[in-house]
Length: 207
Image: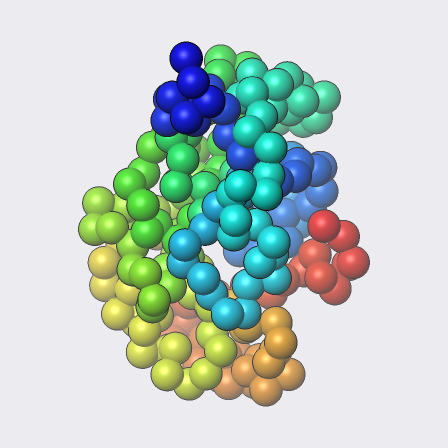
């Protein structure tokens, strides 16, 4: 089987990094978790703080079984992120991790077809490449990045597409947080279906 065939089947993944830390954003902020960051992204958010993840070719095609074995050293929550992890087939990864009784979270823009079985789906949609329609009803958490006042309208539009049980979060874009946080705070107080997500890990200076 060629490397490309193994990538297509999810037996290999372009692993950028993996690390044990605290979840810094959204509904599960403050919880310990093991993060798997997969390389490759064609969404291209200009504010992305891991642009080095975009080019999958820069990150070694790593055996998924090896990735799973590394998870066994840590407690039971695994977060798969990127890049855009759904550029890859994640069925094999989630099957193997669930066999080891891990709780599995994914952080995704939703711009590619959902693969894998997940216990928590954090959907963070981007204007420049919108989510595929099928992922909206499956999202447990909608997290919209707020960089300008116009983003509030985008957030409301996205909120109409998720289920009634989906948790709704607005998160200030880090580089303009001092300007945005007062606007965001006021907006959430006027629209309490939303909650504020802060990038706690950046304040704590952890990965």
